[in-house]
Image (tube, rainbow, N blue to C red; front, side):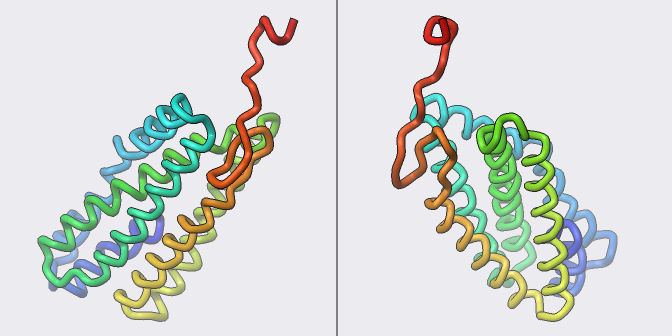
Length: 185
């Protein structure tokens, strides 16, 4: 997200000969998607959790990351301004939704340390933005977007390995029974 917020205006200016103002307006669409798409990801994560437990949350995360990565690759190869804007809208939807689904998983990682885990997740995003930002400075847009897309697809692939104590992963495990007042007594 941060990388796109930084690179999108320059991309539209350089690749599609837009004025700075026009490129910035187009690029701002990416950020505006945050107004609802992050909540959509959290909502989908909650619904999947209600249906099939943590495995559902991880499925949502994996699918959103896969769609995000695939759309970055499509975006990297889109040759028209209208096409690039349309792909960016959908790409942004999946970026923000994946972030929302991530924060649907965070409280389960280590419940007594949810604040710390949230901080680590947020810092990881910032670290990734710095890395990709350097990539955009050293590479052409297409190469940088392809690397970004492949990295996101790799993240989706490795999501199958997420295993949170007391919860089912995609490949194995079972959710621990939920404790209620009657089971605690």
